[in-house]
Length: 263
Image 1: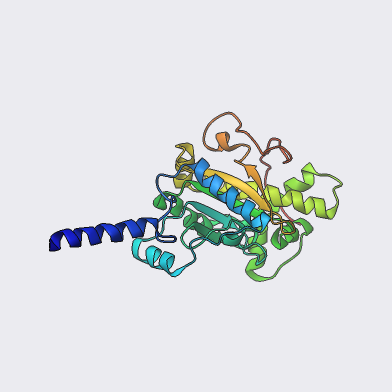
Image 2: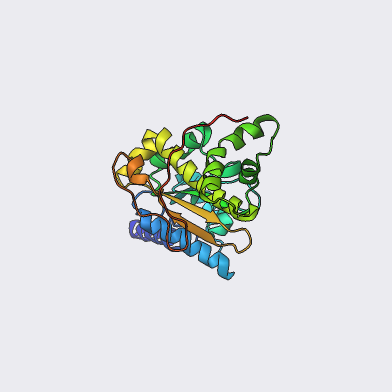
């Protein structure tokens, strides 16, 4: 009799652990497709825009679960460290949901790429490079601002994107030029990731991970999705060109420019 009671008690505890809010591990991590993960990001941003955020996975039960069973994020995001673009908030996600790498100008250098390679280790199905409007680092690159210390080294990584924006948008007003450079800088970081990380390149090529670009609009709160890199197939070793940004986004071939010396 006592054995039956103990078995019933164990079953009840297991059922509670699987159904109670905040205790379930959720659909993230291995087993979630890139498209499903992307939909979760888009749905979260939609809730944020509509003022209907649910603030998931932010309770004591979630802390205990992730501390005891490890992390299983469903998406990774390389974003700018600007305080106006808090990644978990704009996608309405909580503890253990997103693997976030933040650096000024969302550049992809050695430290950032090394961190992003945990995408493969953790089985994360979607990797987003997220720029944002009015980015100070991009603005400095566009305007040619001379910054002291390591800030100048960082901004130099953005200069190729700023130069391309100027070539593609001759005569553009300052605000429009910065906006164009923000998008180009997202694509630049995506290109750097694919060129410098064989691990991520292999994961994207195999379809295990989807690499996407996006821009967060500070004033509206909306995330504008740019899609994969326009030349992703070529960067992966193919000959063609993948589908570019969606309607309303700028399209066109990215031409690799020769490095030019600064005065």
